[in-house]
Amino acid sequence: MNNESLVLRVAGRPVGRYIARPELPPRLSPRPYLHPVTTLAGTAVTELSPADHIHHLGVGVAVPDVEGHNFWGGRTYVCDQGPTELDNHGAQRHSAFQLRDPDGFVEELRWVAAGGELLRERRTVAATELSDSAWALDFTFSLTNTTHHELSLGSPATNGRPDAAYGGFFWRARKEAEAPRVFTADTEGEETVHGRRADWLALAGATWTLVFAGATKATRRDPWFVRTTEYPGVGSCLARDARLPIPPGETVVRRVVTVVADGALDRAGAAALARKAVSP
Image 1 (cartoon, rainbow, N blue to C red):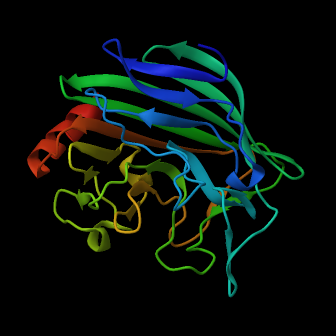
Image 2: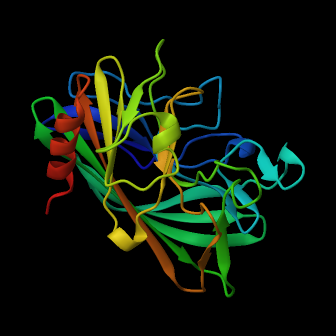
């Protein structure tokens, strides 16, 4: 194990690799990521730079608009113009690991764009066994504005593209022949789940299920960003209806706990594991 990568383990079994200093071209908005992430049986449930969206990098944090700088990768959505190639990409740079254990780590990062540093992040990741067929990835990130002026986080939605409020935690899931099923405690399907708030959301493939629980305080839970038909991916919407301001020296904190399970869970099974994963 070195500063560039580490392996997460649950009960001695490897379940994920974290790449802290990836070598990526600028247009992918270089940033650390987890890939591959697997179930306890070894089924991969992430993808890295798939052909449909090469800037999708496993599991991590990505924001398409930080005061006009792209920390998501790919094209930038410009109002009245659409997706546009711009030379505005930022990078998340690994500074140090404050903690490195087989089951998790605490990392310090700098979000840097043209002109210098915008944000500093503390990222805390932990892997916990839930059963003989499921484990949980607990992912918390804290973004602190290190400039002397207010910054704001935006999305294509706040720049004029409807239903595209992605930004924050993002998990690019395994793509299979059939689109995965997506459901919450009381609804099902991409159209009804996308853009809504829910205590948990499940994405179920042929032999695996991911259950995402928004574990931040209820007042700060973000709507979910969901795709199943075009590609399988789930993330948070930090800026759905309006830009998210961060005053100088202030910090935004978000936490998402994801259950990684073997088998296609039903609603009751997903709910039970979500409760167990976020319980104190």
